[in-house]
Length: 259
Image 1 (cartoon, rainbow, N blue to C red):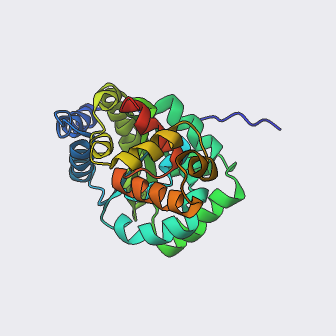
Image 2 (image 1 turned 135 degrees about the vertical axis):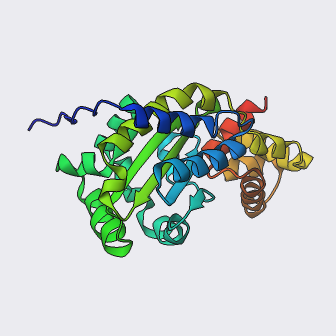
């Protein structure tokens, strides 16, 4: 079976599209931190694309983006988040192979593009039918991938009840925005997580260093002469204080901090 993916050619951008893209970029280009950038970008997307429902997820790798426990949510995405995290994160349509290929090659994938290929995994198809369409009546969705400092990734989701709100011209505009913002987002300091490391206790820093070395809780307990349950509590507390979602992300942050 031929598994190659064919996409419809992007429409030729008109003056209004370029103006819209410029306004989106201008709205967040001067952000000095990732936290400031995601706030500005979300607001700029809502204002210039007239899409009320936007989310901003980030993670140390693309796969971990969907596990972000504290994403920025705007509009209906705030109400969608608990059910998404509990049931659907692993089946997100924008984590499907076809979507990943599109996000890596052109920075943006749209629900219309993906469903038109009729090659979605059954789990992603269920996410679309039961969660986006059935539960939340979202007729259109798109995602924009942005590279972050330290090899991290951000995924910006846009959702609308009206399919025409994220049509070919809007998606093509997003692709232009994503391409232009990539050099900007790569330079943004992640900030809070690395800063939080300086506030850890000496013991917490020891545990974090061993986690970064790939040690299990049992191994850390042996090295530091602690009970394994105590190590587990230390790790949980460190993850909470740094805002990291996993041990891998914690290890990457430790590396960035020179640990």
